[in-house]
Image 1: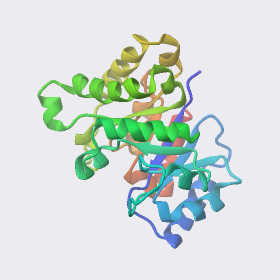
Image 2: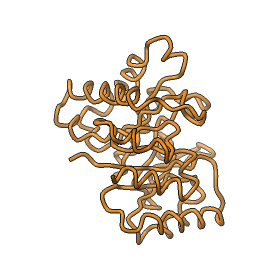
Image 3: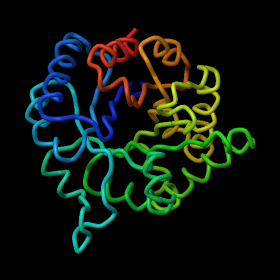
Image 4: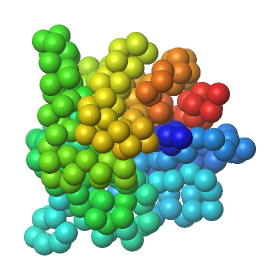
Length: 251
């Protein structure tokens, strides 16, 4: 049975006080929820306090990015060994904002993915197309290329220890959402592409949807056969919204 996961991506938001209130609300709201795995991926400075808050709960935590380098003269970077000091379970890699704003190409994403797995953490590998690419009819080509770079470097079996998140770039932070059917089509395409290489990996692979998931659309998205949860942006910053989305996954 495939793992169900709802992971929050806090992006560059938060403060010590705000985070405490948010986590208190999430911990209370998720009390008794047992069929869905949950996690929050937080800014680096808050890993210690989040670890302390969550270490005795069922909620996992992780980072939003990591360097492809282990150590050295890379001012401002954070290595996998540093993340391990805070016992991170997950690391987001290849998010569209990293690709578009910070110039991380498929090869850099693949390097980071490998480092994350070598350090014993689980990469949440983001793939997705821009609006221009979707309208040009090359969504599948773009996603195939994004996945191929990782598979070429790490091997198809590596996906058995990874999560994939499909995030249509045009639906991130815009209020637009792919219809459940549109999202399902791409999730099915991803799973079939993996199945063509290894059926066993494909059957167990957790594929999340990320693109303006809200409490009012989560249930319909999560009913789709190849959608195994969500990577949640803005709604993960509101405890009641995040809890409602997690509970929608549990229905």
